[in-house]
Length: 205
Image (cartoon, rainbow, N blue to C red):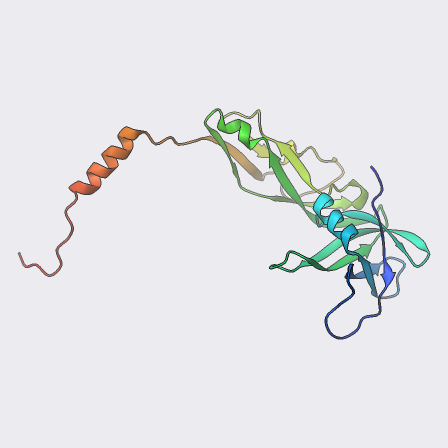
């Protein structure tokens, strides 16, 4: 896998709003660091990182004359402008064991529609524990060839056997037939509604 490298620059924390154009404020913490380090990252690099690799991205961080392995732990985004405001990166050993919620994405749903099928999603993420270098940033499952009644379970996620989960019995989604409403059914429903007399309030028998 190609290494993703981001550079962290010293940025002493100041009170008030962060105003350095072209940068995103961040924090580095974890292995080899004494406390949390206040830093800043190139805004374009961080935007591309999150859009391509998600909020669980594994990265190499150039900082203080060395390159350290890390994991994006938290990203703050402005809900109005969608601008990234802050990012936390935890520095870790590549063989360190961690617990993560990894997002699951499903593709091929459009192909099901041509067969009057639809994929109903029950769960969008999986809980995993294991070495960070074995953890995927996200999981993509192709459902285009499934038939009615087929389910996506943990086994279908095809993860490394060394990863541990409590979700082995979980169903992540199932394929169902699309309910088609015919013209006759619609006309019958309208006729039934018209045949029901409205209740008269206050009328004595």
